[in-house]
Length: 121
DNA sequence: AATGTGACGAGCG
DNA sequence: ACGCTCGCCACAT
Image (cartoon, rainbow, N blue to C red):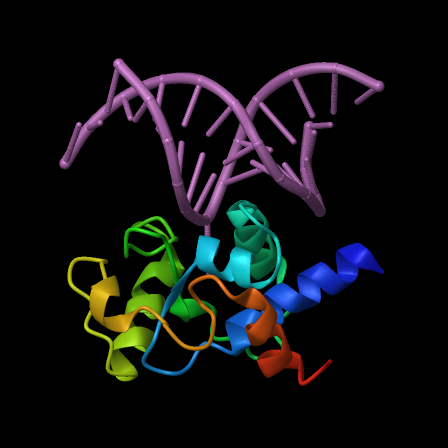
């Protein structure tokens, strides 16, 4: 049940990103216990089901730019969603210094976040 | 089975 | 700032 649990965790972490804040793929990967497998996060989001609704728009690249290609249809949607949450997006880019999710353990202590998210152990 | 790809990220020159 | 390489890992050919 490893693989499935991992995927579920990715979605759970993304779902835990507060409105008005953003997180990078790598950040999510780390929080989900995936280490450096940031691509896995991207893949999970892409394959993620329409329901339950997931705040995928709060996941950006480590440099603050959107993950989607500027020509992608979802690009504009993502920007719009972010802005409607109060996140200023300039030229497909977000100021991480201000909007990056710095909640529980988003820096290093993923163990605590785990408990916070899952209410386990 | 092997190879290439991708909503990524960190290092290095 | 820029381009390249490697790590990671599910999926498509």
